[in-house]
Length: 170
Image (cartoon, rainbow, N blue to C red; front, side, top):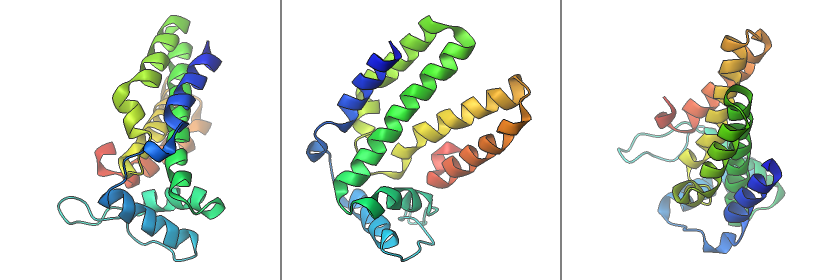
């Protein structure tokens, strides 16, 4: 079941990247990430709607796939892959604490949610959040519920990354 859910999530997020919406914010973020992939270190992200600069984490993350392939599809597919990772993380978390029924239901709902699909196909800072928020939640329960202190580092790391991707993570 998990493989089928992940395959479904991957198909709807990764197929036809040419149909992805691409406007001003996407262009600004892609340009900054391309500049960083060429060696120009980003000290800030794109400006927010109120004119304040965002943290550069989204630029840093989008620069990763652009080092390999400097095409908008690289960033688009990267967002989609992180969306698939989030679906897998939701499955893992739900199965571990609430059983296979809850895991299948939650992961399937995230895999086929129209808005989750739309936002996992766009180059936009906040669209990187689901994978890191799910990672934060997994690390939180492993650290604080199961008392596995080694996961505290992952918990803090995912939280720090999420908050720097977009202030909405706060």
